[in-house]
Structures are given as structure tokens and as C-alpha cells.
Length: 282
Image 1 (cartoon, rainbow, N blue to C red):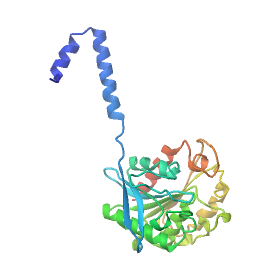
Image 2: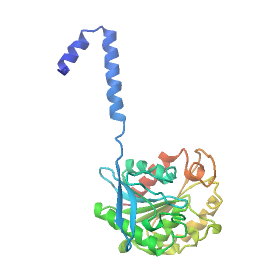
Image 3: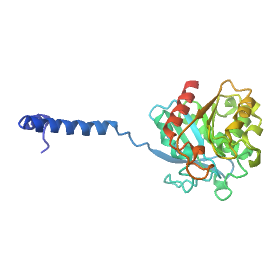
Image 4: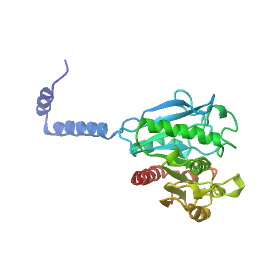
């Protein structure tokens, strides 16, 4: 038979003052830990049809009362190869992939998008990020998200993912099923990587844009000194802002996720400020 609260109190009162103090201290610590431990964020894998014979897979995470939704585009080749159980064959360490739960904890629904079903082999999204087929796939994801909740949908890209997010924002307006806002982190700025973000028709972007960059980003394609040129070309957006970060850790390849390029050691602060900025625009 389980002891009642009255039985527990009598047992404690029968003990010495020191023992009673120790019992109460242990009880308080246990309760405090239980209350302070965050609930595990659940995620599910979703496949939706996009183009004829093509499906788009993504991981979907949602808080209890989302203020907005974000579609996250990883950098590199973008082929996350998400398994039916939600595992990532590639890209788990990517800045946006590894912080997906932080976005949820800051009040945002999250989609981590994979390459589509017809791009599940090398080069994955290589050579595809600025194609109309990519636009069609993500437009279908945006529509699906809007069916889940009547909240704004934002595109968030990092590194080469900024090429995807920006191109889509230049091709389809919010009123035509496009995104409500755009966030670019560690933006691809150099002319030696194909068509960088500043070379796109940025005057067609008529939604709020947040640019997030580390002042010491060492990736040769993402030099901080090129940011003013990017900001100047965002001439039609109703709201734009540059958010600069300092510090953190710088490990490995300067173009990879655990260098300054991936906001290593700054994840909580960066995501919290991005989420706050997005919510402020809603």
C-alpha cells in the first residue's frame, strides 16, 4: 500500500531536526529538478506530394501555441536523407538542423526540409537550389504548414541554404503562396560559388528580411565585409535588419558548422534573437 501524505509528514516529524531538514532539502531538490527539466520536443516525419511523381520529406516539430512557423534550409549539398523514423544520414551538425528544438522552445513551429524524392542522390540540391522545381516543392510545404495553423511562415537558410531561401522569396510572393518573411544566416555572398545571394533579384523581395552573420565568419564565400552590399540591394522589403554576433568557438574548417560560420557556442542566443525578431513582425 502506498503511504499517504499524512503518513509521510508524521514519519518526518518523528525524526530529529537535522534529519527533517535533510529530508525536506532532498525533497525540494527532486521537485525542483522535475519542474525545471524541459519536456522532450516530439517530432514527426511528413511526406507530401509536390510535382508529378515527386514527394517532399521533412521533419516537423510544433510547440503548444506556435506564434509562427519556420522552414529551415541546411547548407552544403542539402541532402539530409531523413529516415522514416526522423534520423539524419547527413547534416545532423548543421547549425539549423542541430538547433531545431531551440526554435520550437522559442515558440515557433519548425520544418527541417530535405532534398525532394527525385534528388536523393549526389549532388542532391547542388545545381537545384535556384530552379523552379525547388520553388514548387517549398511552395507545397508552405501550403501544408498553413493548413496546420493560421500563422506566418518564414524561410530560414544558412550558408548554401540561403541560396534556396532567397531564390524562393524572389520568385513567389506571400499573397501567391510564398513566405511571409526571410532569415539569412551566414549568407553566401561570394561570386565564386555560382549565383550568390546578392546576384539574385533582391528588389523582388517585399517581405521582412533579417540577416544574421558572425563578424569573424572565416568562410571565404561569406565575408562579413560584403554584407553592406547585400543590405543595400534589399530595397523593397518593408523591414530589414542586420544582426551581428561575436565570440563563440571556432573549430575546424571555417566554412563548416562548428566554426564561427555555424555560430558554435552561441546557438541559444542566436536562435532566441531570431525567434524574437520573427515574432515581433507578426
